[in-house]
Image (cartoon, rainbow, N blue to C red):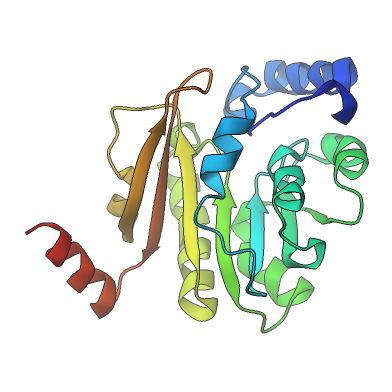
Length: 211
């Protein structure tokens, strides 16, 4: 879970809650480090501010990505934040007033969106989930949900990882790789990648880029 913390957005209390939740369950929180705004900027770099498709903050945590979405001009009614840990709910609401937060498991993604925003198109699913440490079965279950949603509603998955040596690991789960970059200014540095669902168009684009 990304933690872009500023004093005005939660201060020491946010840091304390984040740290305690990491100590309870490191795999679920994903990092003891509180990452910087540069990473949030990169995650949202390709997300349109003009269209009305939903932007899903998956693994929203304390709300840094959702807060940055608002600051960067993404309308509140386009954002749906999903977080499994209810402990973060109050601090999320304080940081992101008016943003819809759903306390639920990412394995229920399709059902959540069918309930919360039936029929709406998606611009992007921005994931702060610690995919690399969740285990293969849990990762498979989550990504099956992501693929189902993207196939039905469109959009792109944007995922970051601190494992800089892994190049497009999610393609092993049937997702088509898109853009990739490393945010060196983040602590620790993070690799940001985008993915789409495999189809004839993505296959053609990948083949062209390989020439």
